[in-house]
Amino acid sequence: MKKLIALLTVALMLTFVTSNYAIAQDGDNATTETELVTEDTTATTPDSLIVEEPTITEETLVAEDETKSFQQVIKEQFIAGGWEFMGIVLLCLVFGLALCIERIIYLNLASTNNQKLLNEVETVLENGGINEAKEVCKNTRGPVASIFYQGLDRFDEGIEIVEKSIVSYGSVLMGRLEKGLSWIALFIALAPMLGFMGTVIGMIVAFDNIEAAGDISATIVAGGMKVALLTTVFGLIVAIILQIFYNYIVTKVDGIVNDMEDSTISFIDILTKYNAKK
Image (cartoon, rainbow, N blue to C red; front, side, top):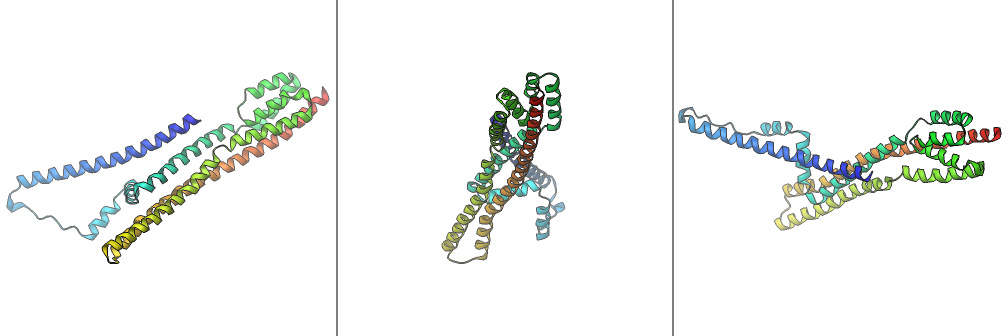
């Protein structure tokens, strides 16, 4: 699982860097082609046929802004917010998503058809005995099968010892299911805190610029406020994304734990009936 986290982290970072590089390359190529076409047209066109270029109005600038892709807008705002804090917030998103994806994959693999396993164990116990039931549990993935195996392994020591063994091993498996959730919660809390810190530092820088200019200009104040608040916006976005995944994972863990408890009660009843017939 550690290798999976590392691979996912590297893949996300490479995707982000590659997409930004591709956008930059497209912009440079478009600029170069425009310059070449302009130079060729100017060189080959007589002076009498040269038409003055239309002036760029505010409506043209608004139309160009509307044609920008979502990724370009995010990139521009990310750069405007400053790489010092925006980069740390981005790392919180990357590592948090890597942990979330790893947990989701692990929990989905841990989810099994417990009723089917109970029926198989009961059938094998009646026809084959403890050893064959242990083989069935050993060849089945999931925490419920592991709990059944521990109970069957202690069957000769009595039902009370089986119950204690199941409770103890169930606590261990619950800890494995909840592994990594504390780190995800840390990134959820850390992202907006870093955003607020970036906002405070940005506000200090804005006031320093006002002091250096010696005049309270609306342009200086608005520009400084915009840059300062961008870190908070991105920090909150990261926290919201990770919170959604976190709640899904917690719900998934609770469902698996409830299934474990229900299946364990039925399993103890099956062992009690088998012990009475023996």
